[in-house]
Amino acid sequence: MASTDQNAPQHPLRHSPRRPLTVGFDLDMTLVDSRPGIAAAYRALAAETGVEIDVDLVVSRIGPPLETELAHWFPADGVAAAADRYREIYPDHAIAPSTALAGARESVAAVRALGGRAIVVTAKYEPNAKLHLAHLGIEPDTVVGWLWAEAKGEALREHGAQVYVGDHTGDVRGARVAGALSVAVTTGPCDAAELRTAGADVVLEDLTGFPAWLAAFEAARVG
Image (cartoon, rainbow, N blue to C red; front, side, top):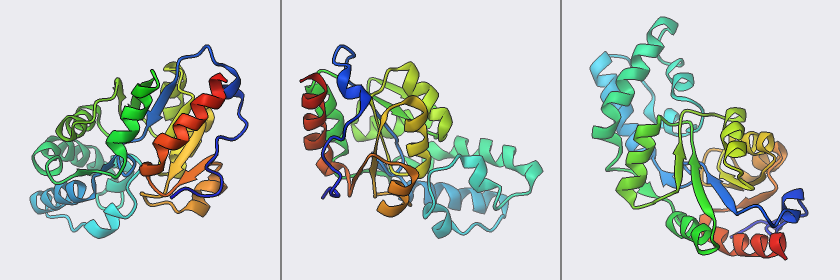
């Protein structure tokens, strides 16, 4: 169910009908419920390194770069090595347990149905992001990894995205840098109030309401 601001708001991009529709999506907790997989990978890393990691806490705050999280558990001079090892073991532990979030496939398909391009811009290591998408049968036109918050905006601008969909306040900031409309979903660690305060233009409970919203947005943009 969408919040009361679900209708496409006034936005300069609505008045640029000649630009092809391009929609960016975050990955973790926007398209993919990666909590089971991330938990499994962290448990494997903890067992291998002997470092105690509160996995429940880790998966409650998915979004920022891996190194940011690992810095809570490893000494500063051990973070880089731990990150490298995590990414190595990730495919064997994290892909199979993770699932598509409600409306994820339909939302990517909705972009295509309108003749647009769907791109994924994520903080996750790009090869692992592609493994998730392939496993779940979600096929964006482009995947760009290893970008967080404002840095996402650079990729979104490069690809001409008019909309960026994410679950974290960092995603809202990325959309702002790109001059894109920020559509936020409350399927991740940030609630609706946090997302609105960060500047989200639209807040949805999940992606099930996105195709209808997008159809209205595109009709207004080209009308």
